[in-house]
Length: 454
Ligand code: SF4
Image 1 (cartoon, rainbow, N blue to C red):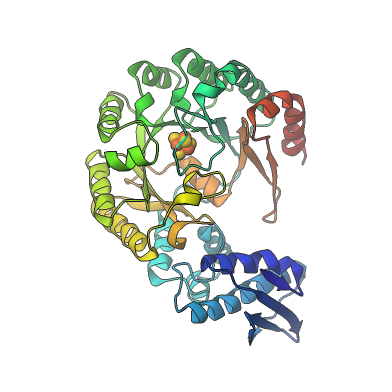
Image 2 (image 1 turned 30 degrees about the vertical axis):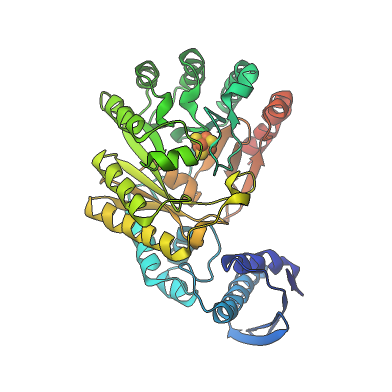
């Protein structure tokens, strides 16, 4: 538990404690006098204090630097107490690249700040490589909007999954009404969608819909007459059919995702997915008949997997030659069945997996183009999107760097509107499908209010 005389710092400091995965009682007092931040801590009865000189003008700058120095001081104390450091040091935000871009925008190199915050050399280099990988999208693409369409249904629920997604067998009765609601949202959005950069139909597993329903979703998007990148996160390979891929092609889809997570049949069984590595190969063979760019997802740190299991998955992923590979690190949030019953892999093992994926993908000609972190991530690592030259996904860059509005439709879809000065307003639709359907008029009105105001 963290108590601070500056209550606005309590959540930030709790995030630092969470990095170390331990329960400690922290009492914090911060004062700011004559350009110096004084941070005094008492942790489980032991005290320490820090002073950092920093001239800051205005409340926004004060809050930003107050957070930075308090977190850094607490991080140093905990690193000493537990005898370990973290790959991203005292940084707890999910978008390290945003912080790097903010430094660059103020005419400074980002590396000195990252070094000061204790970020490892490897992760400073990774951040620089991601910024390089975003050239041609970041800066060129800023402004305008992206469209997200949520299909929160899956063939079964995976054991590690914390998304709000429903087993399609139990939600059949809602599907038609859900698609009607999506179509109404899409039609309404045509009034405020501007300069659309990309469309992303995500899940869940969008291809779990049978062809007639899938086509209704695609038609609702066609009615917006958009062009450019169009991704369907097709999802688990056991739902791929030629008929559905034909539909995607006929409706202008340019990119699909095949979410295998691992090539180990034993792990797939353990995590509750009813498909095998063979199904992944079959999905790739099917996709080869089309012009889609293909993304493949892998997860490092799945329970029961060894470093060599993971290396084998990376090897097999590379052999499938996808245009993009996204390497996630296992992240268990509230709602994941595995959360209560699992013994996690050690941070060292996950670190080895992450390092070998970097090495193997780099050697295979991929480079990193977006990254993000999540709370509760095994070993406090990151998710990284890798791409072959010229194949970076615009939607992923836009969303991770928050450089465009995100018009998100569907249950549990979170819309974001950029309001200038780094401020972002959000609207989240209800998570549960009956509530989403019941409140559709209210949702339409709230989103109009969000996106139509100046
Ligand atoms: S396929 Fe993806 S969204 Fe669906 S249950 Fe599994 S992890 Fe969750």
